[in-house]
Length: 123
Image (cartoon, rainbow, N blue to C red):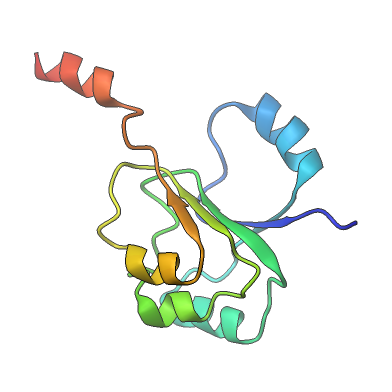
């Protein structure tokens, strides 16, 4: 059985290489997005360039945003095989959650990951 395909959006990971290069990479086929504008990304989706991707993975909140907004039009072009969109950062204002939900796609983000550090800085 082929491994599920993950489309990696944005910069390479900066931390936890042992997990990424080991169990994560051995369990999934990871493809890096090469289409760094919204128009080229839309064209890639229309031509099924990345195949039956199972997940979108954006490990940095500051990169991988070239195709935003993730509006109903863009989400409608995702292959039906997509089941999860895992994104760094706490926000989701550039993503149409109702559109993802209507397609059965879960959205996860890093909300809460930096709460303690932000609170310490504020104090």
